[in-house]
Amino acid sequence: LQVGTITDYPPNETKTADGKPTGWAVELVGEIASELGLNVEYQELLFDSILPRIEGGAIDLGVGSFTDTVERQQVVDFVNYYSAGSLWAAAAGGSIDPDNACGLTVAVMKDGTQHLDELPTRSKECVDAGKPAINILPFTGQPEVTTAVVQGQADAFSADSPVTIEAVDALGGEIEIVGEMFDTAPYGLPVAKGSELAEHVRAALQTIIDDGRYLELLKKYHSESGAITEATINIAAE
Image (tube, rainbow, N blue to C red; front, side, top):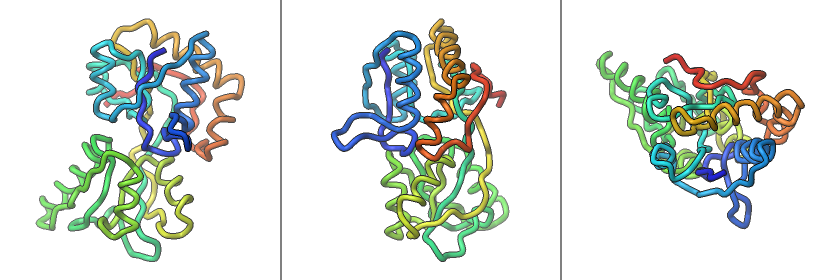
């Protein structure tokens, strides 16, 4: 199974000390491949190159914490494996409010849901209300996003909920969660549009959910809050 993955979005997708892909989503794909009797060959890619490579047939499946959307379903199919929301973090002890962010600088992962949808929408609301726009600061990896807040380059960051929780836990009080989780949406493993692989992956994932391996893996990475009970295909409706 040829898999394209990012390695800069912990705890979902990251790397070991010797540079090998890991993280709970990467391990989950390994379990799915094992269930299908396949070996995995990983290609470490940038987030925005994964879907085009699937569409072009260079890889079979992607791992990148992709939010399943109707727009993305035009080019790939998604096997849904998790439910995540967006969650903000800022320097500890501050007074940042995601619902009052006009004029702030907010760091994000480049081409993710927060970069393409959430923050542009928030910024437009600011401008329409006669307030300063949000300065959106994109980076190619979550470590750079988090560092921007720690070093004061950004006032806050917005990321998927398990990623924000991991960053806050890892930094031991330097940053804190601000606001509540919002915009819960399904993650999907992208495969070629119309491919039979989607149903094979879905069935394997359902087996892993049913026998408990799925929840055990999520608990290992403290990410069980977004666990699902039913594996689906293209569940997003907007």
